[in-house]
Image 1 (cartoon, protein in one colour):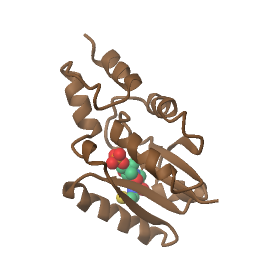
Image 2 (cartoon, helix red, strand yellow):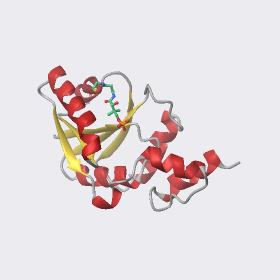
Image 3 (cartoon, protein in one colour):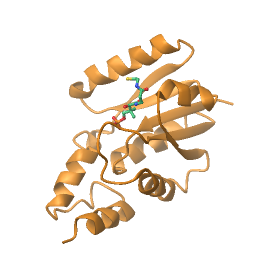
Image 4 (cartoon, rainbow, N blue to C red):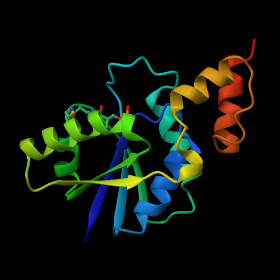
Length: 159
Ligand code: PNS
């Protein structure tokens, strides 16, 4: 069975994330979305909230599982018997960090490969940070995130 891992912070899930999840779930038998727990970043949503948003919005994809992880990504990948790390690439600005991460992970374990999916051009500007910034000032995020995430953002930022 071919198992892939799509890791991230997902604070919160965007339509860009869902596009990568949908497309990469067709490339493997099972896709595990790994939600980073102990990020250096201070997330807006707890790991439980981030997992719930991902579970709800991927419920229609039978081979997708959502799990939290902390520590090294490569350990999480091995613990789940996965062989592939999937990351989305939006623009050249993503490339330096993504390349460094892929090369670090390959150095840690050369049995695990990283593949990049080019983000759908309609989401190439989109990031969780931009979504939070817009939502913070009561801007419209309905085109950027699924309805349930828009609701959660509204709850977080309502005065
Ligand atoms: O959504 P993000 O914030 O871009 O995801 C980054 C993530 C979670 C994939 C990355 O920070 C990560 O893998 N963290 C785990 C720690 C680790 O394994 N570091 C070594 C590789 S750089």
